[in-house]
Length: 547
Image 1 (tube, one colour):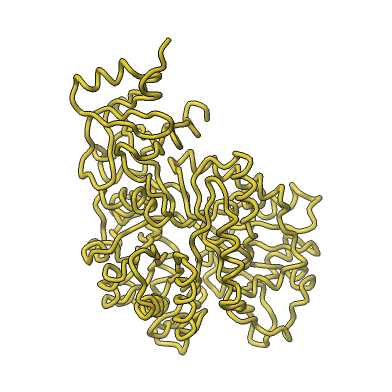
Image 2 (tube, rainbow, N blue to C red; image 1 turned 30 degrees about the vertical axis):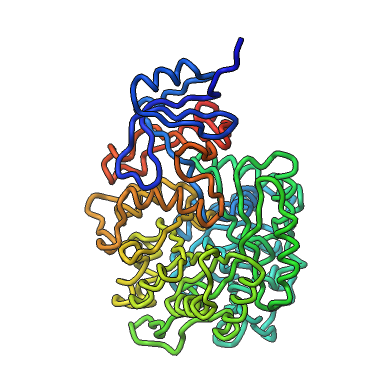
């Protein structure tokens, strides 16, 4: 029997990046590549007759696979093996789950986990005594949901030798009471004070974590991602070799670009080692990007702001946050990394950090072949928005954060005031100013679902919100096309996976099928959509029917 002309033919409605409405047609795939796309009924009939397999999407929608441009999958997979608090909300729930986990794992020397929030502990954050009551003399270390701090008990502080005499490390802070005694929270680089005493995941643990996380992402329709921090930072394990093992053995079924962590303490002397890592990446894993943390987060006053944070009475303090790399040094770093041929992925939460990054990129006069992106963009001065397009800098958005909720309303807004609160997550303004968007979940900081994030980008309310929930800055809504384009071709661009992100002949068949058409779905129901199948290179990597 003659071999079919096409391996697979998908029929029904499909959407490709930039389209304002889906199209009806047939998408033919051969050897992992989109061979042809047709719309005429006669041509579709010919495709069907020449197909090894016909997949009719029915009332669903075929689209390019989602690409998460800012995510930490291995970290998420590690947390799956620990005390996981991410689906809980209150201090009582957190404490109950920590206690349950401690009882269930008496053989583990430390109680470790992640997922609590500062918003659940409004009076200065959680204290060591709370964990002491649960864990006693057993050390405990539980990372905050945004991964920028760790909550520890007295036993953990003792194991690490952290006392009132311990100095704050560069780029970090030990939370203390009025007498200088550590209270139980280590911020930013102070998390590294636990290195050497707190258990770290073994290579086998990291392999298991990646496998579990990859399956979760494929189940959300994700076919490619950028791991937003590959290296040692805070509580994050270095996962470079994890990806190399997975890529060389065929375990890795997604396309992954790793962002190599730039350690400010090592300076530009670390660039040759980064080049070696870039050259050593293999298979579906690349490492073309460098991650630069320019500031922290507003919740602990480490996001770098132009104007001071406010106190509990609404009056300015003398705190403006931390620039983790001095602006004059950042200029040199950007030039050196560009000379080495790296794209850059910047973390900025505060408006001053963003200005510093844009200034550095402007000073470096970076040519168009670089695909730099700036992630988070929580606080943005209006005057910086028009700077993205001329600098060819992509705005990497975490859309799930752009909604009213406990974190936003009770923690963030009081710290910065109403005027600056109105300048948060300005997605709509960025698009109107010509900026390119990519999108990422920052999982495990927030949920990995692209559809939930798209829901918030379009509605500016959290998934499942009550009908009377106020919209978070109406003018910053995106259209469905803009949000989905950010999550497909926008990710392909910053990941340099140029043969993905759109449905066209010659492109790789990295595809997702949704159960329903989002363009025919009421906007406030977008979060109810679900993938039913995910393909990478024309091969199925996940199907809802298989669980």
